[in-house]
Image 1 (spheres, rainbow, N blue to C red):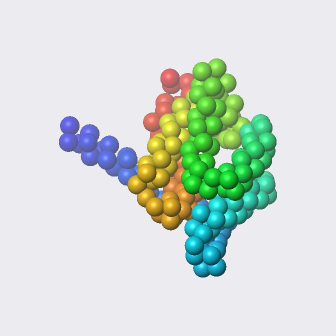
Image 2: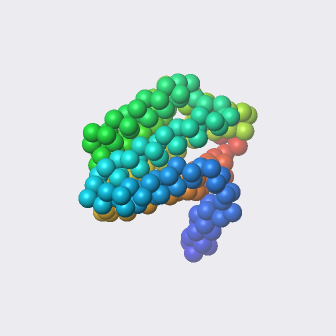
Image 3: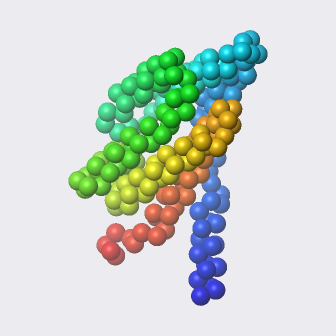
Length: 202
């Protein structure tokens, strides 16, 4: 039993070792968020909500521009989703600044619905759209289920940070969220590839 526990711990630790570095440009929207907020606060110290809304809007614009230049195959309809999310974020930031903190939860909820529908109808088209190719195709079902759980975790994590941290604390969390997502996604893929039987052995 002790050996099994030790092996399990080693496997769990291996999920988070030698994680590939995240691309520096993926952190540019986060840099915009963390730079604009204190800059606006310095100009208008009595307007923290305006500073937050401005920083959040510019962060989303930077993220949209970043993804618009990525030469990757995207899932069907993703461009429309991104445009709707961008304009929705801008409207929320202008009208209800604090509600913007819940935008990541709403995005994750959208992905939960997508992956849940794919899991129910057996198409797994969202995973196949994001990660095409023969390497990922045999694991489409497991990846769909894992991504559903991952985004449910993101919702719980974001809402917990909102409840327990200040606006400034939440912004730090949101700024480093791409790193958290990169690490967890890498661990998730390793889990699926290591623990799922090879095709033909199921």
